[in-house]
Length: 87
Image (tube, rainbow, N blue to C red; front, side, top):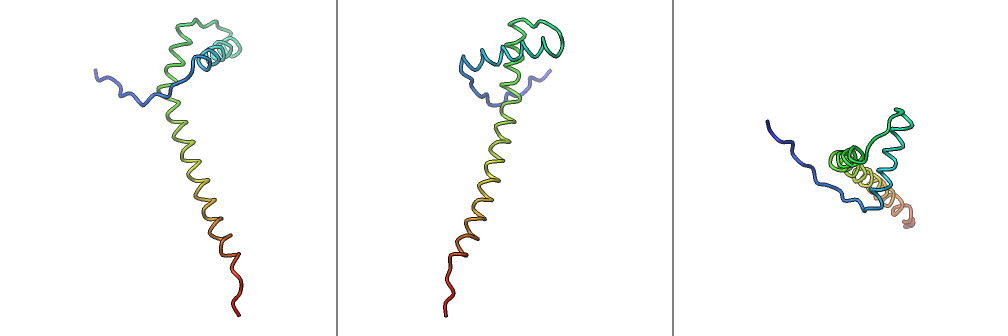
C-alpha cells in the first residue's frame, strides 16, 4: 500500500493548538453530545494542519492576488483620469 504524500505543514503555536483543541472538544460535545479525548483532539488537529490548512492558505493567496489585480486595474484607469486635455 502506497503512503499518502505529505502536503507542506503550517506550524501553529502552542497557544493556538490549545485553543483549537478546546474548540474541537467543545464542537464534539455541542454537536454530537460526545466527549472526545486529548489524543483524538490532537489527531484531528494534525489532520487539519496537514490537509486543510494548506488548502485554505492557497485560497487566501489566490484571493489576495485577485484583489491586487483589481487594484492595479483601478490604478491604471485612475491614472488616465488625471490627464489634462491638451488644447
